Amino acid sequence: MSNLPHSVVTESAHLTLHYRLASEDGEDIVSTFTDNPATLQLGQGQLAPFLEQCLLGLEEGAHRTFELSPERAFGPRNPELLQRISRATLDEGSGPGAEYAIGDLVEFAAPGGGQFAGVLRELDDDTALFDFNHPLAGRPLRFEVRIIGIL
Image (cartoon, rainbow, N blue to C red; front, side):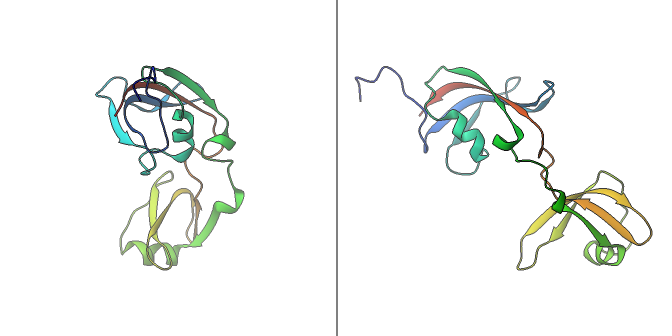
């Protein structure tokens, strides 16, 4: 291995890095650049798979920015994931006296266990409209990364 000039990121690499995920207009969604760098292991679900794909093959010390289309990021928005549910169903899942506001992220129990979440878009006396798309679906993203160390 000593003949390799640099370590490169592999699918199971253990990394120390700075990363920044931003909207197309440059607004930070998450960034480690102003704090301590992140240490993570690829393939463990700590980063979204499409972000891990960007890192593969980068060398230690690399500093890159990737422009990701919605299709390469969280996918396009799916209109079928806009679901209207009854207030009775909403109240049943949340307990008595729960208050909701437009824009709230509400968790639901999934059949067979587990949870899923939707953002409340509309609310009237009888129904609630939820958006179960990922909040970043349909948005192009900018992913900036600086590889500090490959362990």
